[in-house]
Image (cartoon, rainbow, N blue to C red):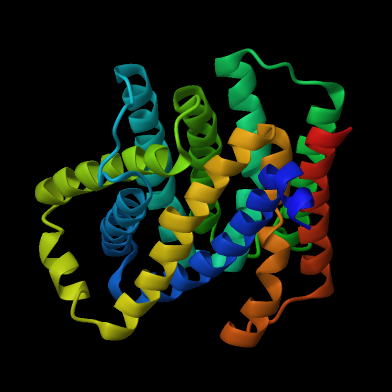
Length: 301
């Protein structure tokens, strides 16, 4: 068992990431509906700073990242801006509008978008199987979110605003993953995550000054139930989940890691039914499986 874990640490880390993101998406959906998605974004990142810093201090003897050069700081900061600020801001609002289950299904587009951004930024090649995988993933998602045509017009089963927000979250995560790999190099995943999270905290703090959102953040701190859910989400999300995702892409290819991490839309179905009493049709289960299968085709054929 120990030898298997050593040989497949990247794949195991990716699977653990998918489990973490299942917990965090459900937690943040519940908290966001109580105190607002913007407040949740900042509070969970501040919590993540203390969690990451404590772990870093225990392991290395320093709280904040040490040893990173200007190149790494630049690209990881840009990655944090794209992923934690722009991408997650849209994703968390999508949680409120259409729920975590459908949002995370649309997030299955993140690996295909990561492949596209890898081609655009890193010069990675897109093969025929990559393109087929993208089409299959889009087909699976479409099966879930589109209803039967009425009078020749395509019907969308969920609010278009929420779908577009979730797509923006997928694009932010896909691009953020590529930029993380570009900047991380041989750096420790925890330290790399800390740089990304610190960027998110600073940008949100400045943004809230200009938008006058700080009173809502302070008010959110008084909601015990919401804070408990944010704490769970912060632990499994920007702390453990993101660190594991960077560990995954460090020890295996971005494609393999992204494929395994993309199974969240399937993992989230049982808790969505049990905890949120959602009605999930057979068509939605099949669509989720097809979407994940498309991600597998994207990288494995």
